[in-house]
Image 1 (cartoon, rainbow, N blue to C red):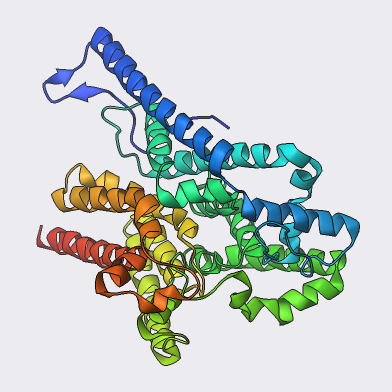
Image 2: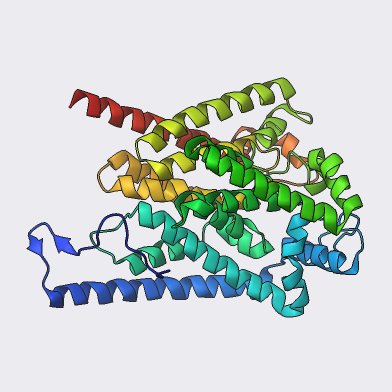
Length: 414
């Protein structure tokens, strides 16, 4: 497997006036690498400052404790971390995968973070392989490096590293299932993502929807194997998860908490405790149906990254809990927008606006009163900021479907 496989469109550094000389190409390449090196230094300082001096890997602590509980044959779902006071919330199969990091002790978090960044690198490589965005000016290595360096400071990615979350690995598994170099394994990757963390289930359904029954058989077999492994490890604990914890979302935090940017969280913040169950069900069904129809249309027109973007955004909306760090899925629409930005002004503006909002979210979430049910007492502008990702998702879904409809109309006219 090549580190930088050939992209869909061949890389060739040219200008409108004609091919560049080899000397000019070399100068341009060197200046691009120099700029990327500068961005890398800034990112490194930011990450070191946060991860070494300020970060508290709360979620990684939960994962490590789950692995330890499995090794000691104590209850995975009956132990709680001493620091952030959280319990393990994933299927038992996931706890098995965290055992190696438990055994690494104090080095576990560092290895986990490094592997997460490598997984993100691989994710970007696969997405850009089918959706190159700077093919004229940047080599494949420079494209991947540029995307990686510019998305790391965005709030979902920074918060994922901050907490030691599993999101980057889930993002990689999802990407492998749709854009991996071995399509025969796509069902395995997708099923593993759902077996570790149930929220990617919508991606799995869409994968089956576009790939057919062969993938369905692989998905079902892989997921059942993961399920049986969980019951073989700790039958009583596995039963507790699937019979009780699966529907008890309050175990992971208050539904109205500002960092829960799901549709359910937004409705709770707008209507008060309990929200509006009827409205939530109606909108969720509408969103899932519309997203599948729209995504299938995009997929059939070879707009694969946009199609996966629509499914990802819809899954974030309909999940009961979508913490802000789950929004690493914004990688897909950002790359899709970046590709369209070369020829479409509106895509360029939406991309820049989305990027700016995600970057400023590192600050904007913090300035809004939150915690201890303060979200119920926000004024009008505070409610807008408190639901900023939720609003952005609706805007991006509308923009994606509207833009693609206009493109289709233009093609029919031509």
